[in-house]
Length: 354
Image (cartoon, rainbow, N blue to C red; front, side, top):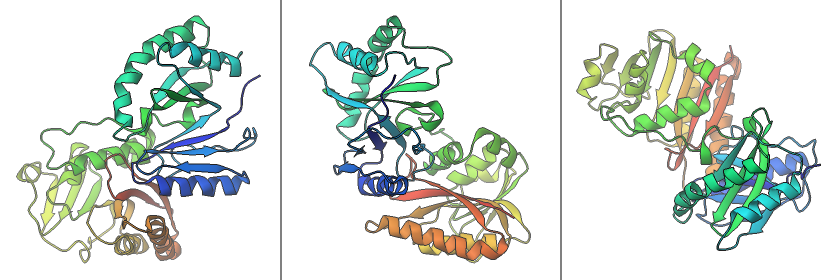
């Protein structure tokens, strides 16, 4: 006996709650499940309440499927916590809803908002006490399927849930904690590092980012994305009228060409196209789509800078342009995510299917 999910919690960048809610609504409509969505501006999360347990046959969305949700947490109950001894009611709730279930791990989550970030210390202090209580109650097993999830909108309220590890992000709160190396030319290097972690799996990184692989970085200056590729041994043509970091040129792996990224083309097919230029998403989509249509690249990573209004519409328009332009060339696979290091943008990975 166990309690099925009652709903979902999508963790998102503060300010993008409406977009995350629209994605959850689209998922619920596709599943034929009536839901109620609670959206609070700049809260960092969206609450989906099905008002009834979700059927077992429903396919819950994983962290990879939704663009604007860094993490999508199923929940089976919510409770108000006392000011002291918060461990006891949490443990009693888990035992009540899952008397025979054991879990592989414990995940504590909180929103990435100004208020939510104050919960980081709270969760750090609570974790060892809750883990000890759960261990003593026999609620952990090394080969168990599900992770136990506790989401805290505040220190006095908690949502409890469970999900297979594959459904959850590998990183707590869906945020890879990356440090900017001192030698990186710009903070944009972190954006590409996160994109490679989030949008590609380990096997894909090993196969598609081998040393000697050829890449083109459009709008490269000062060189954050070029630097990331050079660290992996790729050979990069850096295209920009602006000046590149001198240390990159000394690597022997970078060919800097002063040119317009929208008009420059390689002499033959390259492996990777990179593009982090500040431009309308429709124009970037057209540029990338033409590269694939002309079979100038095999893979691409690029950013779409979204307008303040009609973000979803702009993203959908860009997708349609890419699919239309590449149809005759065999089409492309698209993976899209708003990363932690993104701002008013999303990062897209594209792969030629032919």
